[in-house]
Length: 248
Length: 248
Image (tube, rainbow over all chains, first blue to last red; front, side, top):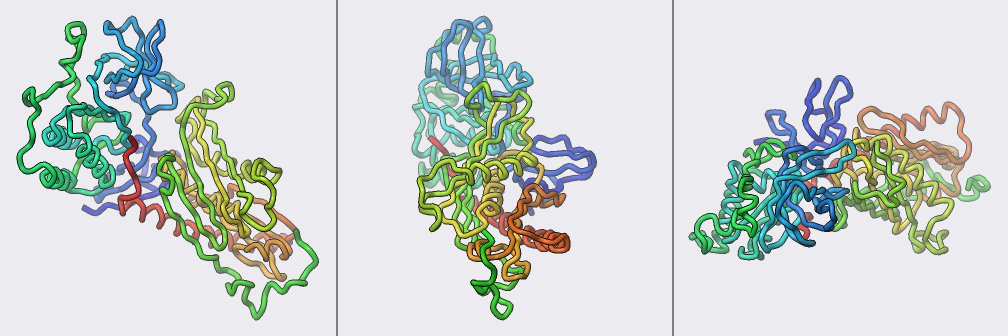
């Protein structure tokens, strides 16, 4: 597939496109960030700043515990907020959480809901423009990474990636760095599959606790929050940050 | 600046002091992503100028009371190193000159950046001149535009800049330090690429109305050449797909 890199200010389409990261001057839509246009005229941003949208799934870390709620670092200029009255679990400073964006106001302050605490692990920063690529079509990429590294992974639309302490972290970090570097190339899933096979061997290592491993559902207060859906990174392609990024 | 005329011969046999024709640019090279920790960065080598630029943000506004709920503040800090040129012997830090340059560069970008998407934040553009050889403000604009594109900050357009002046009685594109110091006039310009808007115009010395019109023509052609180099640098960076690293 032919892909052309376009710079900010280059024309994408006549008329209004209404896509994120574009700029419309009344007649023509222009790219606002550096991106690619494929032969069907689809615009895919290569760099962007994460802008929260209601319904986004985000991963973050608790940075402040207050009477009214918790402040959560989300890779945004200002942290998100979890009001205490909306949740029943108690969080601590430094806890990793996955939540859904409930409201975003005019100045970009974020309120979060559907909070789940994540087990011990690690969070890394990934460009939010490339998140759909990390998840892959129907979670193909993320599923493969889970299989080969033996631990759970959670990806937020904000670009934070949580990985379980049980996974093979050096390998996982290498694979994720590779995905970031080659996010704009096609055939990425196969390439990563080959890389993982060369490192681990043909047989995916299945986590000790069966297929799903220690998923988010098995976290401490599951009884209290059980009514809420488990996050499975199914938002993949419909994510706000980059439409159709995972198509090959 | 414009000292006693023609003590120094600036044009000999139609060639300039460094062997260029009147409408030649100096050697120009741009590298993208030179500061991995920054959100966006670029390095420019333009004749004897060496300038590095880092872009951070949108991030929390400091001081907080300076923030605007309507748009991001753009903060630009141009700084010349103490070792950058023969004249700059003093300590580095704010001076009359660097304050002025920071202001004019900031104002050029305030016309381009879609700042209303990021309320209550600031975008920092740090420009450090490591080596100076005339025309650092135009080189700074050119490199900052590339760094902003690399940071994924939404912009209406790309901008290029070039200085045109009068040296040895003739109009010359892209003055170097000798021509700037001993020529008659110097006019730095920055022009947006698509809609050809002048975003920075300054002038030293005297020019006739006719000369200014010719300078605008020459500057437009010069800016196009600079834009080619900017576009090539960005495309090279993103096609190669290297230079970026996952932060952890």
